Structure formats: structure tokens, C-alpha cells
Length: 413
Ligand SMILES: *Cc1c(COP(=O)(O)O)cnc(C)c1O
Figure (cartoon, rainbow, N blue to C red):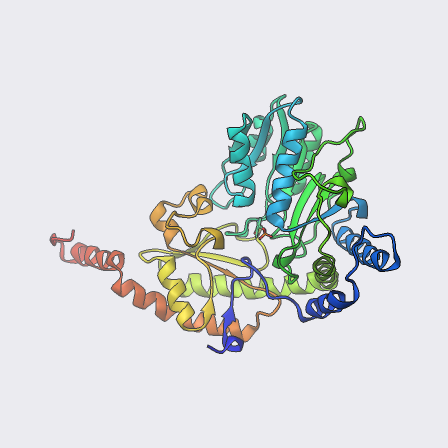
């Protein structure tokens, strides 16, 4: 298959690297080989690249450089934020509030903590994927130490009321972590204005290399009474403000910082362009295809996310048919796409398992063109029609309709 011709519409799963990032990384692979902890010239050169990268990443979210630590992924950042705060604050309390629609990188650490004696509240969401702020506030007890609510959902694109959550957390003196992997470098984000204490992001979702992530930690983890409010999950050297031992992946981090720099310059224009393409897909498909609906919020939504439900057919069949036309989409989160379990996010917004199986996620990005969107919009309707004709669910629907017309019962009725 000619990869150039392939229409990649799965940017929420991962992004191709921006060529400008590739160029930057290549430079550092050869020039910046030093260990940033070494005191000699070569080491200090690497240290300078590391610290410049930290400052760049911090500047995108209105943080200070010493509040950023680099990790290996969004998953690691989520684990460190949640377990690191939970373990350090065990004496203060054992209660954590999160939501039912979090990424597995948040839900699984929470489940682990439950086994270790912590209590976790999984807040429900409404039909559009939003948590309820009153429910959040009512869930807080004197044992609550942490609220972890994602900035924007990776499957349905819904953007949570982060600023309001930050205010609630602050007024109750509870730490607030947000998994911002999908929102970071895509929409404006300000840790001061939004009262965020901890924020996770990942390089490979923003046109940087895989295997690099970051965690913003307010005041570098220093608590109000001195001492730290978060502890590391690994033992080793004193890297990354003693929060994350391991010799830093300098070329990868420099690539991540380059990706941030590009996003800083292009974020607004890109968001506007993608929103137009997004709405074109949503409007065209929901008007032209019957028994089809949008999942997630219509406007409080990531600029690049479309999630559609199609009655009577399975998302997997649509995905495979589109793939045969050189179009790559997803049925839910990439991590669970190999399992037959319906998406926990779609169930949480109130779809039944059958409806959840009929969903398709289309996510756009920097290299998505108008022509590619046109191509997708041309290929999808006949696929849906053909699948509905051959699907047992579709057949049943037709028979039901005929039965109603002829007012007699068939053996399929
Ligand atoms: C991709 C993703 C993660 C995991 O990030 P990795 O860098 O792939 O480990 C976590 N949360 C959300 C919302 C994501 O989309």
C-alpha cells in the first residue's frame, strides 16, 4: 500500500511527527549526547538543552520551568500524579475523586489504590460526557486528598469544566490533577487561571516523538508547610527534581519542546481550521445518513474530534471497510480496540452495549486536508448503506418495518 495515499484520521491515538520535530531530534542525536548530570562541557551542553526544553514546555501552560518534570509517557505522568499524591498524603486522607470516563492510565492506578485501601469515587457523566459540579462538590469529604478529572476526553472529545473544578478543589484544599493529554497544545490551557496542581501531557499526541511525557507539579511538589505533597514511584538518582530518576531522554525531550514551540505559534489557527473540518463532517454525516447521531458535546468539544453512533451496524465493520479504502479511523480508544468489551466511556454517557459497538471515532490533525475530508465523506455513506443491508440487525429492522406496513407477523417479528 502506498502510505502517502493513506488518509490517517486517527490523531487521538497518535500523531505523525512534524518534520520540524524530526529535524530537531536528529540534530540532538549527534550533537547532544552528553549526560545532563555530568559537570563537564559535553554534559552541561545537554543540560542546557534539557533546561531550555523545560522552559518551553512550562511557557505553554503558564507554569514555571521548575514545575515541569519529564517522564516517559502520559501514562507514567498519570500514575505518578495519582499514586505519588495518594502515598504521600495517606495520613491526611484516603479518598480520591475521579470520573467514569477517564483514560485507563488514570482508572487503573485508581483501581490499584482501591486494592491498597483507598476509596475512589467515580463521578458519573451526563449524555454529553460532562461531570456535574454539584455532584463533585458533594462527593468531597474530610478524607478527600485528590481530584483527578481529565481536561478533554480521548474518545468523545468533551471538554470538562476545568476552571470550575479547580475552584472547587482549591476552596476545599484538595489537590487537583488533570489528564490533559488530549487538550495540551490543542486548546489554550493555563494552570494558574484554572487552579491546576498537577497536569499530565504526552509528546506523541502533539506531533512529537513517542516515549516522552511531562508532569506539571505546582511549586515543584512543595507543600504549604514545607515538605513535599508528592513522592516519586521509582528509586534511583536525583533527576527531575528528585521526582523521576533516570538519565533524561535529551533528544526526545528536545523534540517534545520543539513540538510545543510549533503548537504555541500555530495553536489558534490550527484549532480554527480543524473546527471547521470537524463541523463539516458532523453536519454532513448527521444530515445525510439516517439513524446516526453525535456522541459527546456539540460545542464543548476538542476541535479535532468527531464521534458518531450508527444504529444497526458495528463500528468494527465500518473501520475495516474504511481501511480497505485507505482511510484509518477508530472505534473507541486504541487501547481497548482489540477487546470486545464496549467502551466504558460510551456506556458512561448512557449508550447500551449494542449502541456503543456502533460507534466510530474520527480524529483530525495538522496534516489533515480538506481533500482528505471530502474523500472520507464520499466513501462513508455507501459503506454504511452496504453494511446495513447485510447486517443481521439491519435485516431485522427492514423486516420490522415491512411487518408494520403489512400488519402481519413474520417468523422474524
Ligand atoms: C494517549 C492518552 C494517554 C496515554 O498517553 P501515553 O503517552 O500514550 O502513555 C493518557 N490519557 C489520555 C487522555 C490519552 O489520550
